[in-house]
Amino acid sequence: MSGQNLSEVYALIDKAENNLVRLCQELIRFPTINPPGNDYKVCVEYIGNRLKNIGFNIEYIHARGTPGDCAEYPRYNVVCRYETGRKGPCVHFNSHIDVVETGEGWSHDPFAAELIDGKIYGRGACDMKGGLAASIIAVEALIASGIELKGAIEISGTADEESGGLGGVAYLAEKGYFSKERVDHVIIPEPLNVDRVCLGHRGVWWGEIKTHGRIAHGSMPFLGDCAIRHMGAVVASFEDILYPAMAARLTKMPVVPEEAKQSTLNINSIHGGQEESNQGLPTPCVADSCRMIFDRRFLVEEELTLVKGEITDILANLKETREGFRYEIRDIMEVIPSMTDINAPVVRVTAAAIEKILGKKAEFICSPGTYDQKHIDRIGHLKDCIAYGPGILELAHQPDEYVVVEDMLNSAKVMATAAYNLLMEQE
Ligand SMILES: [Zn+2]
Image (tube, rainbow, N blue to C red; front, side, top):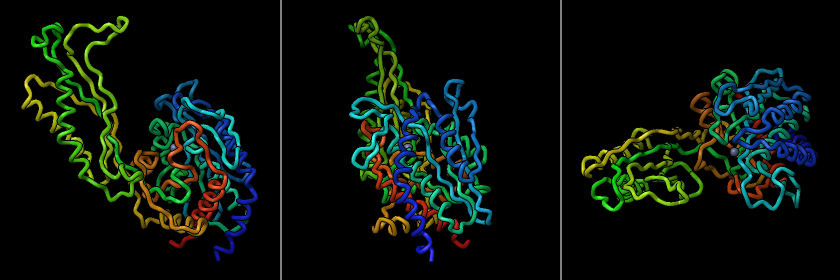
């Protein structure tokens, strides 16, 4: 019976193709680059005004005092809620409105949103204004079809995902917008390909290690103690102990790409010794300090305390065995892995919708990096959350990023089907 009903919704989505293209283009034309967090207010007002016209209640939430919030770049979010008037659950579509810097290498104006051969080009087309536009069109079609709906539908446009989400979803979750009291199911239309359901992401531990030495004349290094050589010993121990241990550890999380199914450690940077400030002339000194920034990504099977212990053990061991080895270690950021159960309602229903619309089995994946699901899970305690959207994962943050119009139409149908079935499902 639902299939019969939904054919009208699909027809409305197909009819809305030009509308969808225009909506996506207009969203891209707000250069919401973060940092610094440009044009958030006008962008969320554009979303709010559109949805107000079809009966949504609109709330603008200024995340005052969050990182980067200032008079010039206020952190604005919008939460739009549509009440059907009948008792039932709430399905929430969450999209971040911020985009990363454009960078070099574009052959299209990154904020012109040109439509060429069925693709819309621009910064944020893929990540993730195309997904936001598709979710809006999906919900508009559901409502316009006159099909009986239960419960409530929410659409949010949120700030700062690209810089950690503190002025966006984290703030909203702390204020109760993502909580069991008001939301049951969450779909985040991040770019993870139109036929894949993303269950969650790996964890993150960013840290800094400092080694200390003693300054001396470079011609007599034996009179000093080189902090860079101590850091070299740290790197050597990582190579000997840590990398092989991580390589042996595979997750049951379906992370893509394949190489990200294991724990990873990136050494982001190492800075040691005196700066070559005087026209590049080095000072003839032994390095008395060295600093490393690392980025450890870990798996749902690993505990953060053990992940940390693995590195602190290496450092403690060097202190025992290596003469003069002195160090400090400092946390910069940590995120616990998040993975929604494969049998959770939003997973099951979205996978079925993909199969119905695209005629192929949905693929279940996890993201190598994190996104706002972490806040919805950890702060909001909402476990029924996935990422699903039309963008192509590999294009995110690249020059000439684009979204395929046909993928937006298909994902809109998938999102409408999933939302309908989640709202109408018997408890
Ligand atoms: Zn994104």
